[in-house]
Length: 560
Image 1 (cartoon, rainbow, N blue to C red):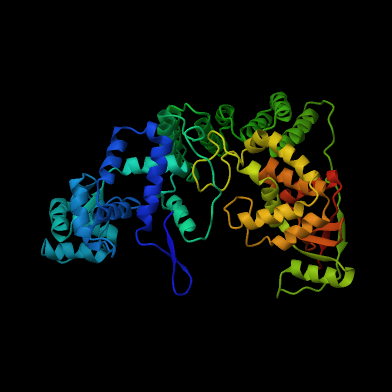
Image 2 (image 1 turned 45 degrees about the horizontal axis):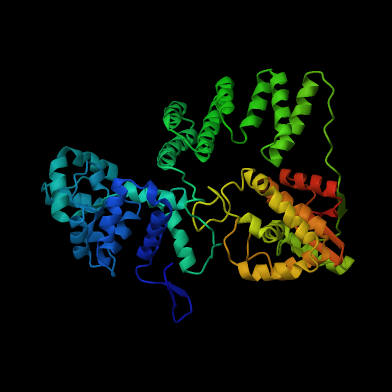
């Protein structure tokens, strides 16, 4: 990545032209990993861009990565670039069009309200109308030809070409487009340049790359385009528009299974809109075509709504036999018993949530500090307990460190790019199924490790600040992590961390507020609640697990 240098205040400063350096890194990756998928136009861009001098390359990258489509030359302010010379070089290389034909009102976009008023004075010798920008544009519409002439006399408009090719390069690198100009994705380079984050070294080559073929790339690109429109239509509950965009998505040729998952995302979104519109049967048919959660759950609930409990039960039994995730398994077990009862069949009564120990503390708390801290202080003083605020951060961190190698194991289509923070299948249930044997092998390794806290302490130091979906390096202190490793039995820790990996979407949250202890093996997972504070769904899942594993869990009630 771009080199860094220290300022007098010891803050990291980006090297001049850092954006070009990072763009070139992206192009190198695309050539090496996806060179065989590139088409004539994309190869022509690479050749033309390579032939530019550095000054012209700097301007091109500045413009093409911005959200705007065209620019006013006179408004550009890049001290490091000789703009007139760069424009000349880019135009000659056919990477930039000067004064392109732009339709009204788009051609007015770069101009302020004050400048639009100048048009009336300078070009028409008329008094400028008062009012909003929309009103001014409405008046100018009658003078489109005069306005275009005035624009080109006032400034030169610059339109960087090959925008679609650059977007596809970004798609090949990031596996997505981060909005207009993909600034959100390119910012990952800057985070590394600044030292804010570092990234795990991931092997991505022609064997492990995400895009398998040109058809895969083009299909993905089209899906991004139409799915964005579908999302907007669904958000506005515009059924007619959503149906139009869904029809376009259905036309896309999707040769690869990852693309079929995206098609399922669109189908789930569209089916949800049909549900909210009251068209259960059409929603059901669409969910039946989807392979992505929560399609099967929604089907079962719709069968029930349509008085087809027998079909709902059959589907729930399928879910229980092969659940896509822990949460889907939980639903299948619960809903199948409900359908048995509805059909008059023998059923298991709903399992009551294990009743954890509850302690009401004689504590007068104030709003001056967090209630968890006041509870900690009270327990230290009254009961001699030591501890710290742990909640989700420490257990997620342990899940990452204990299975770091397994988490980052590469394979075909698992990672898009070098800035990944999680495997592509991490949240969909596929990760644990794919890595089950490796994780079980690592569990045996840790169970037989004489001093696992030493190895994990070294790993923490080595990986600190590495971007990872499970880690919050600022909130999980290594000394407290070591305390957990020394005090809590290994099997307890491994049960909790494996559960997080099995279904991170459901189990990354809901963990107890406090970690309390007296000595090795003597610890408590404590949840702080006010009298009227209900146990959340995510917490209920963990209470169920703690009961099954016989882990010490206590709810501490604080008077209001």
